[in-house]
Length: 270
Image (cartoon, rainbow, N blue to C red; front, side, top):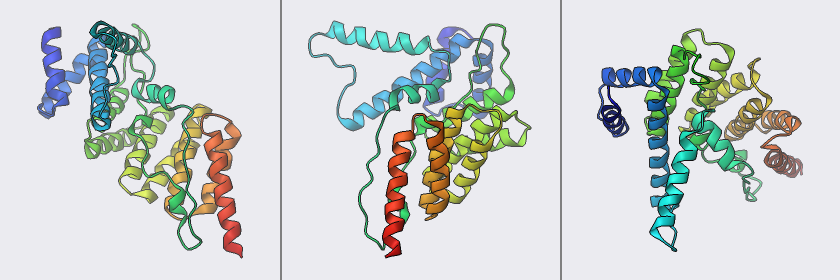
């Protein structure tokens, strides 16, 4: 397919107009040509930004000084994003969200620990694979599948995304692929209120042998929140303590949450 045809197919894909064979054919084009993949990645990202901006009633690229400045800002955003070849939306989320704080309100003695937990996990916390590390690398089918599942999740088709990640786990993935699929499933299930299943996947993701400590920390932080949703404070404390030892992105939030849980447990002893 030509680039013009690819752009049309990307537009139809994001709108949900492609059949499954057409979707598979498009992903094969992504596999053959990394530039097409980056076009898709950029388009999807900017649609997400536009959606978020519309919901907040603002334009993130609006510059009151001039239309030219506005165009330059948009061009800069697109160029910077297209050139990125690390973990696509998961890595972006780590940059954008890093340092965020979570507010935990006081609750009365009779309420459950679920009140301390996150209401939802940002979909940007899901993680894909870097399938185009260099011109010599050949993307494996499971890497492609993980990123395809991530694309479905970003387009709001959570059930389709779950199905793909489950298939990845059934097809003998390597430890890194397994951990990514487990993490993504845990996040999707958490947001659907399936906290027991979510904790199972997130616990396995955190315990995978060949993952970075920062990936482990993220899985532990989400795992701690699933335990709170299940009113299991002691299990949450264990996960939080492990996350704190890593001393990464979630340390401050984990320490605050651990203090809240301890205070509440002490109150319950009276």
